[in-house]
Amino acid sequence: MTTPQHDNYINGQWVAGDKYSPNVNPSNTADVLGLYTQASAEQLDQAVQAARAAFPAWSVSGIQARADALDKIGNEILARREELGTLLAREEGKTRPEGIGEAARAGNIFKFFAGECLRLAGETLASVRPGIGIEVTREPLGVIGLITPWNFPIAIPAWKVAPALAYGNCVVLKPADLVPGCAWALADIISRSGIPAGVFNLVMGRGSVVGDALVNHAGIDAISFTGSQSVGGRIAQQCAANLKKVQLEMGGKNPQVVLDDADLGQAVELCVQSAFFSTGQRCTASSRLIVTEGIYPKFIEAMQARMAALKVGDALQAGIDIGPVSSQSQLAQDADYVSIGQQEGGTLLMGGERLSRDADGFYMAPALFTDTTMDMRINREEVFGPVASIIRVKDYEAALAVANDTPFGLSAGIATTSLKYATHFKRHSQAGMVMVNLPTAGVDYHVPFGGRKGSSYGPREQGRYAQEFFTTVKTAYTLA
Ligand code: NAD
Image (tube, rainbow, N blue to C red; front, side, top):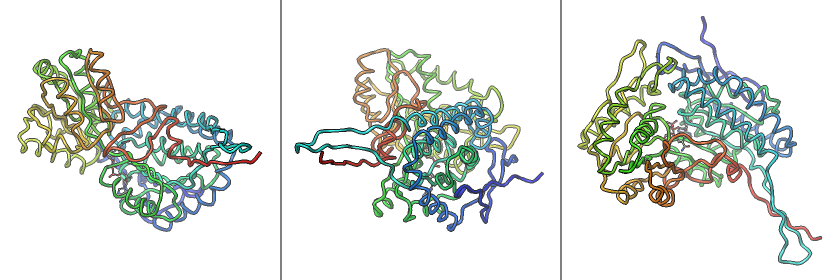
């Protein structure tokens, strides 16, 4: 059987590239999902030119037509959530239920922004000069480059593409080269939605080649990026040099505080979920578990028991809690951090070793460190794998200080039965999203998503706040 080839989607056509790369299942490296092309420089240029040509008509197109197209895309994703979720699990390594949940989220995002097409509002104000009326309206930005990471291969493309199109922009999407399958499936669905040629374009390939060319293309008006801090920082500088609007969502080192008065079972469950589900490969994963002295011994004991029961295995196998790490290089990075944690004086309480399963995949036992301090690299740098460390603190005040002692600020959680501490933490946590008695990962699709400090730059994504980035404001004055 020949391996299926997948092409770029440019100006309403599927366009073959010069080169193709295999998309390999991290649960079983013998399983190749397909061959996915790499866009050439000419193809990237064609995609940008097609988007520019489509923009004048699309930017003034009727909101009913836009809403109908987005709703149709959302409906198809939801109807095919099991199939798309299975594809996602197979290419990224999330468990199949997690993959199906992510596909459903992508479908719901399109349906939410179908509604937002009809809700974009402006303001009418009186002028300080008598006889003049003022209207404040929002207009599309133009052609937007969308660059997405590998860890949410369908939800993140959805939460950038849907608002961009809803507000009348044209887009060129460059998904992570590790997981082009879900983005290709999304492009396939969009190609049948009635959206005119050139409004949506897909260019696949390497970040340093296709991504870099997209950021620096003169025909691109703005960039929405999700990925690592190092790449995001460079993109921000490139956009600033060319005066392009830019939005960055980056990494995290999210704290999960557990206070003496917490419900122990609940606290352990949410720590295990936040730290290790989706193999710890979530920007909102909590990798720093900050535990007060009174509950510390019971917490450690309960964590060990819960972690011992976790099943690591093939993402498509029923009953699995944690799939493989996404790639060989990510596995090597996770293993490096386990060694670094030990060299720095942390105690590796359990896990951290490579696991073998029936098929050859990138399996790792979830790792938990104790005796760690905030000066250790494992508590300062994003590992982006199933590696968490416990930091023991005296009381709530110390826990809050440690929680905020990080260059990141995406998500933060507290497990407590105290209204006083929960309320104080919500107000004083230096994170963009705060969770009380809930995992730091796992958010709704209709409300803003984003962080502070080194985790985010520019306006928030998702919900109606997405219009801050994907539109530009116009103030019009009329003499009556
Ligand atoms: P990455 O930065 O390596 O890559 C992200 C995207 O940028 C990919 O499409 C990649 O091909 C592209 N890219 C790489 N180099 C580029 C360059 N020089 N110019 C333009 N584009 C380039 O990140 P990753 O490994 O794919 O994803 C993991 C990271 O993403 C983690 O840091 C994680 O925390 C972060 N993340 C953040 C959020 C959020 O919303 N805050 C969500 C998911 C993931």
